[in-house]
Image (cartoon, rainbow, N blue to C red; front, side, top):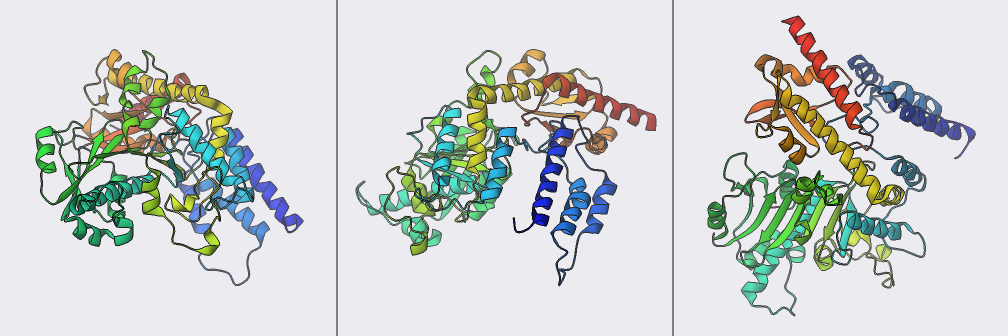
Length: 499
């Protein structure tokens, strides 16, 4: 720190954070008051000052005016929006070190910093958490989240199907090297491969996959639904087969279960890619009767050629953190190899065979996301994460049973009608709606206005519905389900009083 004032301000920020964490144990509000947000908005500086306000005044502005208008989503187990997760204590401690050292984890320089070595170890531990063989997944990196990981997966799939078609057309042997999309560009490579169309064949793709498809130049309109029903997850195999027979087309097929499993194919050389925000975590369970259905939903993912996912959800590390695993290290390097720049050269190859992250991922400038991941995995181990996920699942099942038995609410989908099915098939997300149409249209707003829990909206069969997603490491099934029931009963009483 440059002077005592700087040190004092840092201490004030740390004390504020510690106080906030302590208060989160007492079940504080999950949303700030609307007036608090309005007051904070009006305090924002809109014109850059010629003379800065100074660190002390700015610290007071941030802590006293802006911070109260932030929602404590990562601190509260009652924030059920978006599968946001939280931050475990071990990850939070590591994040303090990340900010203090502010490493740029781009080039593997083992003689100058341990950062890239820590990242490699963290990725190996993560593979072990999911019961994957470390040796089978040599291509691995951390990303900003599942969306950028999906970009990597589709880019690698695109590389595979087009390069395979080029090799097939040129009749290259396996030992010869064909020109690649990464070198030629997408249009030139497609001309070389005689491909006029790349189609995504799927049932119900996540919205981030369409964004990723747009980024890698395949487009959102290339998605074609080949399911048995409009909102179904089962493939219509006859429709799929017809699509795959289209001439001059390369196809990427995505199978959706709890997660997405993606198959990239030029009709002769399929390459599966898995895209999962949180379904992958079902693999951390040992086989047991209580969680056998959930565990079974993630079986087979080890057969994929690449896997994309989020760590800042169920792993409960700070935003933003995702991961990408690929069986073929050469594939990621062909797509993401950084252009030759002398000052970014790590020199001679390292004896530990760790590739510089800037050559196997999107970003050249990279935050030290790996340290919180490493810290939390070492701190809690496999058993700790099994306990966290089991609590989240048991909470979701208690809440689902409450809605299924309530005369004024409906659990979705309707097939979840008996306790045995609920206790077998519910994972961490619960969908429900009010049976009264008028109440249902205002239900989300009424729930969130309580500021005791936060839910998000969705739709089911084109009718509005509510979504509860349990992902925080602090979830307690009995305590938190009672809180949800209390809020919903209060919403019902208030609505009846109004009508």
